[in-house]
Length: 351
Image 1: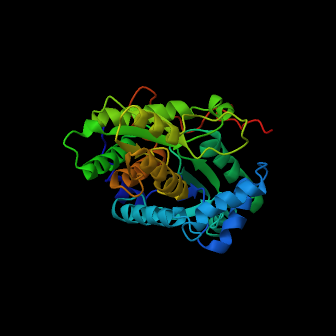
Image 2 (image 1 turned 135 degrees about the vertical axis):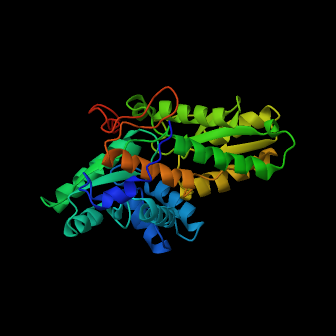
Image 3 (image 1 turned 120 degrees about the vertical axis):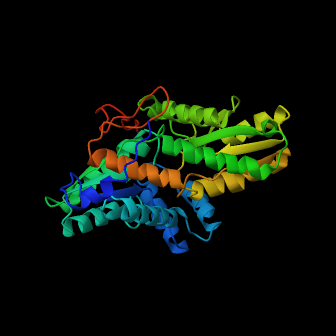
């Protein structure tokens, strides 16, 4: 059911809200060449990744001048949210902190404490539930609060949004744009492949990650009226002998090519912005493999600052500010709870 929250903006000016700030929490990325290796040291700390592999990944960043676009895209999302908040409420300041690079989460939480923020909502840029995309961010927030001390604000995470109508609608529009760019008389001539980041199978077993990915894909395909599609994963890393989710998107394009498919639309719905793993792994590596296979590959944009997605973030904030009984979702899984069970998305076993 659709609800217009626009009237809440004026009411928020004169009433005490349960939260006094919004915190955007993201992965982070380098913005100059000299930051790439320190950034990767932070990302890979404690993961047992070889120096050889680290320098191999660094080359992906150097391909784009050492700049990951994720920080710039987070700034664009914040600007879009600030404009929407100013126009329609709620009237909350927006802060931003990253797990792996500046602005680091601990520095942002310290600034929030200095500004007198007492209780904040955190929007994490990950649509699906998993250890790395959900629970680990809760650990990051807890560590940042502990480092800041007793004056650190309480920070509650907003629910995952894999089946929210706004997330689905934004992805539907991005994929339609990709198909329109093909100028095919029959769009069914092109295969549609939904893509998410691969994770270790032992991590997947303790989280709803696969369910969320599959349900998102089903809802989007249903809205597109496309009964035929496939699922694939990208950006596998870690130890060679460790099982990760598959099939790899390159292998899926190979399978489609072997079956006579000449055109493929890849939709990276597991990502909310066109950051470096999307740009390199799909737009460079996968595109090169597709060319060698004689396949025309078109990659749909991520939701980014699509108006439906930006409105969704605002709606999720209002949902918590006003304790609204309306929690919009689509499909069979329903709206995900605000607070996950303690055993959900447990950390993977380390080798």
